[in-house]
Image (tube, rainbow, N blue to C red; front, side, top):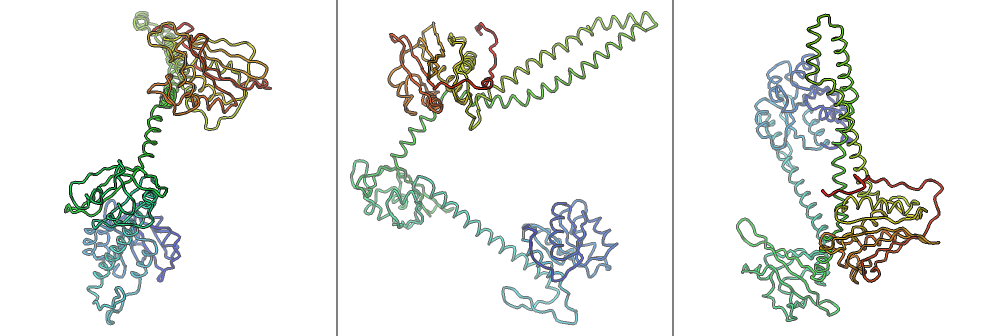
Length: 603
């Protein structure tokens, strides 16, 4: 149905009984009819409709075909077989494809059919047509008009003619909708094709070009659609070894000739500046149901662009290991949140209500035993409670619930920390933060991950060194550097030490990370500068960490240096920031989950 904002005014205002089991559909149709000037009463099924017909007078019954209980067709048959309702018109609402209901409705004597898919104005006009006063029997009915021509149809065939007219109009409606849909799809396809960087050409079976998108025209350097046979001459096509390409060597030409085609070939296109553009040409034939060739779809991809994209794709696939862990941690934290909330809520209910009820029950049972006049019965009850450790179980249950609540509370805290760390706000505020807090937070998090293989320690002065930064992002950068330092050790090295130091002078504050592993090489230093440069501190599971860390630190007006320790005894990251005055309020406190114990135990 369309909008109920139709401005159509009824030519013959009438009292209409609307029979519709769907409340939404019923109120929609009623509003549409009332806006046109009709009086409408709604009946939710055939039984209510019949009751309304016996009590009040109506000019038209507009009924749905499919309803619970008695159908609209059965209701129509009852109305038409009752002489009391002889002048009453019955219109059935059906679907476009419901031919069986249409035939049954004809047999039941329905005056008209309407399809629900038509617009409001059309439905209102059709209702006007049905409500138009009938021609007296002694007066010949006027000719029926169809597509501008007048046709003489007697009254016995007039109803069938109206039905056929509706069917034809529906077919025209479907045809118009399909045509509009096809044009919309074609327009959308052209728009999409003009946005892709790959050239797309659609060629007819006679060799003429039907479509070439913007990228194809740009790469070929043409504005008009030229036949395939002119490609070699107009485009100066060459083979990769710079030999002129003959027309019969074109993959598109071969496909059009229905011979065995090379569906992929590398070519050189002569550009306006005289330099050849290397491209990869792919063709795909389109055949009809009889197997006859109708069109050929040709794609043209710049190999230079493809290679550049392949390099970027390979580099992006090697995402930072910490970023992957962070995303996974955020997802896991989100999944843990809901069940942990349920568990904590249920445990709280058990502790507050069920345990209290059990305590009250055991107290009442003790009082009952104490007042029991029969000694034997009292002794039996005591023995029963003792044999099942009832009091101990009640006390132990409450202690167990308290321990579970404490554990779930810790899980909730850890989940919150994971979410805060892995998914910081898109634009977190700049605040004054102490580098000691940043160092402690990052160290505790990496300690939980690598404590069994590496010895971590912090060397930080008591005097706090304040900087301006986004705390969560700065922790991410320092944690990333710690992980790189922890992975710089040779596989056979047993003594692995990573030290994080905080230092400050009159104008700057620094975080220094030292590891007694492999010293950095030039590629590692370049990796800080170039986001696509690979160094030894990276592996197939990590990609842009050093450059990302450097960018984050630069955001806070800092610098990142990587250099070897004295005598090449290891490597050192040094992140330096401008020193900031102490805040007037307490500095931002970074929450982190505490490690299980001060001394790590081997799993």
